[in-house]
Image 1: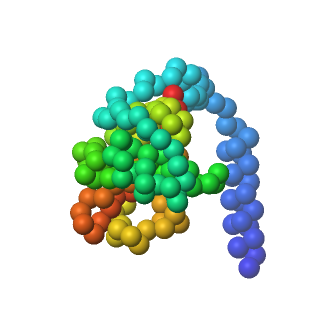
Image 2 (image 1 turned 30 degrees about the horizontal axis):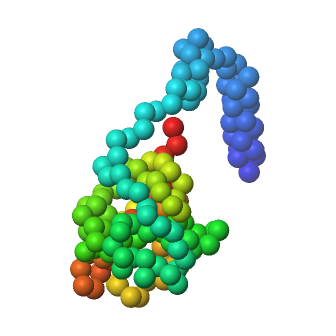
Length: 162
């Protein structure tokens, strides 16, 4: 037991000596300065697609607006939910939403969306007619279109911040 106490006291004393004797050199100070975030804004990623929503609705009115095939529709789901941007596959959604990959950028503007560039952060494939609002990925905007007769894609996107 006595040896254990002596060993612990020795380790503590060594640690105090090492810490007390530590003085950063110029190289360490320069490295610390270099690790500060560069204040220069990053250039915005080049959008793979650019789309304008033609209308905004709530969930109950979304089917009628989507069936008009005038372009993507912004669907308001509530303050604590992402904006849903939906478009039928046969009205154009398959052309762009289904072709996105993680890291791709999309420029959105129009009714019901905050204009800007968004970056794809997630892709989820779900069964049609069985998806609920709770199944949407956590994101600023979620794109939705059908990809087959039984499946749809949910594309989670975050707003690009310079």
